[in-house]
Amino acid sequence: MSMSVGPVQARVVGIVRGRDIDTTAAVTLERDVLVLGWYDAAPWRLSSSGIDGLAASPLSLTVYLVGNDVLELSGDEQLRALGLQLLDRACAIPELTRGLKSLGSARGTPAVAHDRWFAPLLTARRSVEGVSDPTRQVMLLDAAGLAGECARAIADIAEAASSGAAEQRAIEAALEEAAGPVFDAIDMMGVAGDALRGGALDTRLADWRCWVDTVRAVYAAADEAWPAFAAELR
Image (cartoon, rainbow, N blue to C red):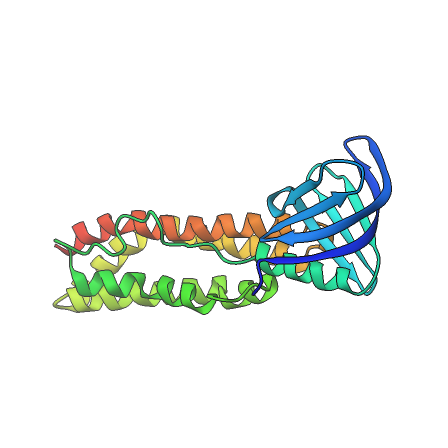
């Protein structure tokens, strides 16, 4: 994918920080930054982090900025393509496991159990690699499905670590208690995912950023739960 798209000639109408805008610009996309090249002033660089949502129609692109400002760009069909490119780049799933301490370091811990516990998270991460459509990302990182997989991982770990039914139940109960924050985080991810799928276009990017934060929280909670798992299994 080219990292620069444009320029596209457009009329730009709107209000930004109390200033009325009604002029023409050369619109360029550089990575996930929308650049408005004015003919009589320095260009504006609108990072996707400062954009709450986008609405693309065949001949126009509406940009909803953080702070409730709105810009309406009108021109030709190239604007729609540019808007879709911006969404595609802005909604790329970030690295979810960077900075996690327990994942990838099973030294001194039950390695098989370690791998079983993190397997659902690694599978979920792989499922969204290369997917930039927010609603499809939410579908692939399904909260109910992930909760079920984590519960099954706990049951499998407890079964492998026990020598009888009573011990298995005791270990499983201890692991479930340690994993309580993980299931709470998954519930929050599900709520944020529902909000994203049901939200309007003018808040699509803002809703996506909130959802990504909850996804990160799930991975962090699972990482933080592992030391308690390891202590129970020794």
